[in-house]
Length: 175
Image (cartoon, rainbow, N blue to C red; front, side, top):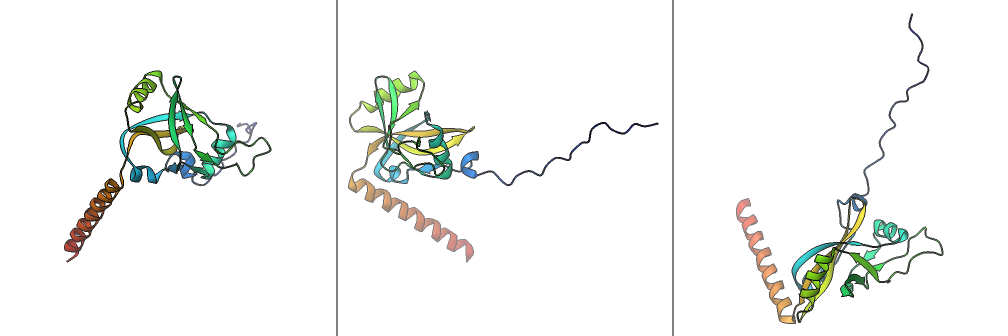
């Protein structure tokens, strides 16, 4: 004689829809597109960013801007200045300041290397993008040298020539 089960087993609930591509790390939260136009990007480093809770939520909403931001190394610590992270839409009166200075989380050896490079004349630290990795916000910093106006024109000329060459190849394949 079989017994009736003492507990009922519920079927698995349906999975929610696809996760936000920014939060999952599939897409960058913020990109500094002008960095490659205004600077020669020599070397890139990944750094963590010390943020408040409302700042992380704002970045997930896509309210981050790196246009005028730059990195600074001072007293053996790295900082991100002028990075604009807008106010969180559901935040309270304790919401964060949009342009506050944020600490970058790097190993001491990385900080020493960056200090040596940024002390050379003409080199600076520029954030190129903000993104999520394993649920944490990361900032990609580039050691950069500023471009002159003629450098920018030369880069644009080269890019235009490459674009025309690709278009010509595509046309010849179609014909």
